[in-house]
Amino acid sequence: MANMNKLVLGIETSCDDTSVCLLRGTSNLNEWELPEVLAMKTFNQDEFLGEWGGVVPELAARNHLAKLAPVLESVFKDTGLEPKDLDLVGVTTHPGLLGPLLTGLNAGKTLSLLYQLPLNPVNHLYAHLEAIHLTEKVNYPYLGLIVSGGHSMFVLAESSTKFELIGTTIDDAAGEAFDKGGKLMGLEYPAGRVIDEKAKNGDPKKYKFPVGLKASKNCNLSYSGTKTSLRVFLDEHSNFDDWDNLCASYQFAIVEALRLKSTFARKVAKEKYGKELPLVIGGGVACNSHLRSVMKEEHNQVYIVQPKYCTDNGGMIANYALRTMDEKAIKYPDSLMIDAFGRFLSKDLKKEFSKRGPDFE
Image 1 (cartoon, rainbow, N blue to C red):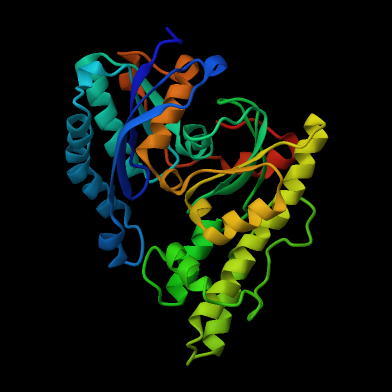
Image 2: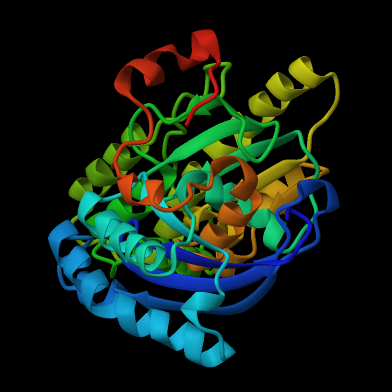
């Protein structure tokens, strides 16, 4: 069964993007070939949520509820396929906003109930990283960097289901630093892409912002000080209008932390495996052009997820559901008992990971 091509539906509703994808491929990782994305549709709430300056969980959930059915209908119409043709449904169950997560999960359960399909509950952070396999063949083990709106972490990936956390942010994530910094500057939401564009015309050395945990010889990150420094700077410059240079300088500090800590992560990986590991970078912030450029210069073996698969999308969910189908998929009717949860790591696990280096679910 594992050698046969499988038709997989991926559903992603963890935050504010409603995205679904139909994908065909094999679940046999020993004979892995790049899967074929048959159709992917995404409804983006940026314009709507921009009026609020960010994500409002209840409003995001209501928009998922309104848009999910039409988006699902669209991918089946575009491919000429029907739900009864599916072999598997993959759906994001964690981490994320609980209301939006439950909207997508209930859609997946409905399909599982109607067509007695197996359901694969997907950790969408793993999916961000493993999205590299949509376009590239990367062997295990590899060093992974996940950079998204809510998470920034380094992991050692030994397989599609085994990840060891070796570093994480102790406060804000890189994506939060971009969006919250942009809000301080009065930029439109989401600010990350706006900062990226403005920075292309600016001097990254014009203004100096602190690089969090620069002196600590580990893989941990911190962005609260960088963000606070920007707020203090703006408070002291009330008539400021040098936005391109400011964006370039602020972006430099955010990316420099990732570059610096990636060198420590590379050392940790080499100590464990006795060789240099390829670096895989995924997550919404991996769209940032400066980050992509810096990491390609810093590392010999670096694979960065294509921008269309960096932000939350159904393609990465379908792909990861397929790759973990034989180990993680839950058959009907047990699939109807799957639940969603918002958190990724418990507080205790976050405190202790550096001592014990556990695999994490």
